[in-house]
Structure formats: structure tokens, C-alpha cells
Image: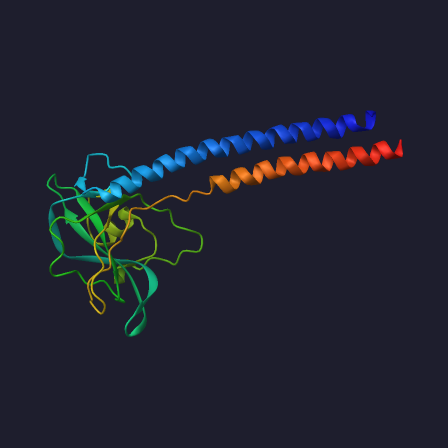
Length: 227
């Protein structure tokens, strides 16, 4: 029996930790489900005027004056079109708001190899706010001279456009898809929804706790049979 004290103590500690982590994931599950319910409610509701401090899961709209000739492309993605796969990027244009600050707006994916500003952009674009993304280790180098960017950084994109006082976030436009074959940007269709894998995580931790119990029973049985 003495030979079971150490493995028993270690197994009990690991068992308690696993159960605790499983319960914590269940609490996270309830929190995440509530957050997703709020996002779905916001998705169904009309957009509200952008507040001074916009949230990440909120549908908003802005007004202002588009700056002529200011455009950039973000990223590179291939979309299927009636003519076949076509490469393009997210068209970004600059909007000067009433207080004078400039907001960069991602109007959606376009089949272009270089940025071309829209002649008739939406008067009051609606969508959601996106925080800047830090440059990744394997991200391609931006090409401000051609207006091509691979990091969603409003400060860098605004600087490449020759703009100052650019908001530290970007508006991702939402709206209906243009008809097939249209050259209009393809805006986002939904608010961003965070992944919800907490149920699977909880099952994993509870399963690990069950394996610990099973393993301890096997070890105890072997040692008791030898004694």
C-alpha cells in the first residue's frame, strides 16, 4: 500500500486540476454563448451611429466626405467568379469625418491588382470596427508605392496614402453581395463571431480526469497483485 501513496497523491492532484479546468471551460462556454447571442442580436438590428469608443462586436455606420483618389488594397485572396478564379484584395478608402479625423474603410474584396478608388462610394458606410493587426513573421512586405498592403495597420496604410490624423482602427463595411460579374466590392456579410470550442475543451479535461482514474486503478491492481 505504501507504494501507492506517491502515485496516488500525484494522480489526485492531476485529477483535481483536470476537473477544475473542465469546470472553468464550462463557465467560459456560458460566457461565450452569451457573447455570441449579443452578436447575433446586433447582426439583426440596424446599425447605430459610431460612438466615440466603438466596441469590437457592434454594427455601426459613419458619415463624412470621401477623400478623392485615396485608395489602397489590403491582402491577396483568390475568389471564384463566372470567369474562373480571380486574384484581388480588400479595397480601402479614406473618409474624413465631421470632426476632421480620417477613418479608413474596407469596402470589400475587389478583383484588382492595384487600388482604384470608387467613383461613387456609399454615403454612410455601415459595418464593424476592426483593431489593427500586428505584422506577422511571414507576412509579405508592404508596397506603399503601389498601394498594396499585407498588414491591417491603419497607421501604416494612412501614412502610405499621405494622410495624417488617421483613426487607430478600421471600419469593415457590411452589405449585400453585388450581382455575379459585377466589379463592385464584395463587403462582409456578418459581424465577426469568435470561435466557441469550450464544450470540446471541457470534455477533453473531464476525459483526462477519467483516464487518470483508470490508470491509477490499473497501477493499484498490479501492485496489489504483486504484494
